[in-house]
Image (cartoon, rainbow, N blue to C red):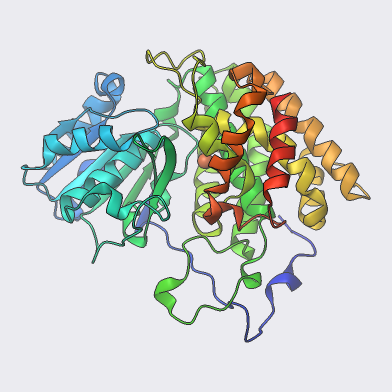
Amino acid sequence: MPLRGFEANYVSYSPETDPVFTISIPQVVKFGFGVAREVGFEAKRLGLRRVALVVGRRLAETRLAEEVRSSLEEAGVSVKVVTKVKIEPDDEAVMEAYREIKDERLDGFVALGGGSTIDTAKMLNLLHTYPRPLEDYINRPVGKGLSPPGPLKPLIAIPTTAGTGSESTNVAVVDVVRLKVKTGISNPYMRPTVALIDPLTTITMPPMVTASSGLDVLNHAIESFTSHPYTSKPRIEDPSQRPVYSGATPLGDLFGAQAIVWVDRYLRRAYADPLDLEARYYMMLAASIAGLGFGHVGVHVPHAMAYPIAGMVREYYPPDYEFGYPIVPHGIATSIPAGYAFKRLTAYNFPKFREIVKLVKGVEVATPREAGEELFDYYMKLLEDLRVPTSLREIGYKEGDLEALVDGTLKQQRLLTLSPKRISKRDLEEIFKDALG
Ligand SMILES: [Fe+2]
């Protein structure tokens, strides 16, 4: 798909700015119906003999998990099953799972599940390969932000939700219980070695999980597409210090724009009919390419706001997420603020926002204000169609929470710096006030 008018942003060469972007992807990405069953072949190819299969408790009892396990065993790979996976994992849950495998001789990991499972497997791999307190690896300022000294053990990721893109990123998201903060671990070694992306694994996703993960894809795509260009950040003298997230790149633009189109075309269909294979196929592909895009470009304001929105939850129990504890699923936490945030950001990257409006609504807008309104309407309508709340009030937040929500977002500087506009405390207060509804 031709994208117009963004090329010049990237072709700048100045001594002050960084002229390089990096795209790191798994060694092997395989896509297709039934490809999950090739896990045994891939593990054998990597020379693995004993792996931890990280899989949530419910999924562990399904035929899919059984097929993955037998594929491994038939290839001569023995399996230690780890089901201690918390949705939206926290450091204590990760440590609990780690204690189960600490003394096991493992030479690799297989993750079967959504973003929470893949992220848990990434952290278990990190701890198992280079044991240290988890906090040492957690991004600054919450943790010490240390990078492991070298590569981890091979990790084969098999995503079962079309959302996070975690199978191709080097980031794991984790709550730190003691500080009540959601943060992450990101370093180049966290990325899975192999991603087996099988749309058939997603047909059992219930509607709300389909909606939430699909909205996450849309936000990855829109946020990475509209972030400031990688060439606008200061030059980096030491390549090891170049941040994982670069800001928008020409390749990220291609992935983001196409993912926006596919989500627009297929998310409602996948939500309405779980067995719509065409919709499942393209949602999975959209999730993967959006992951390849934001995995190197980054995301900005809605994702930064989602951290405290998910972290401070008290009383929201969405359908299809009956875990016995309140939860704001990641895709919902990013999509409630997204429409409000985009509306206030359109003026700061008008060409990109105008393009998005054209992609999803087929109309040419003349002013940033028009673009903001069109995109806001589109977004709210989409949330309503998917029966996802459109305000923070609907998930239990009140005026008295605003300050803590703003402060929690300000801690996500790594993401906020990618916003097309430099974000102040005041900006966040206004967006949160809008989103409270
Ligand atoms: Fe996300």
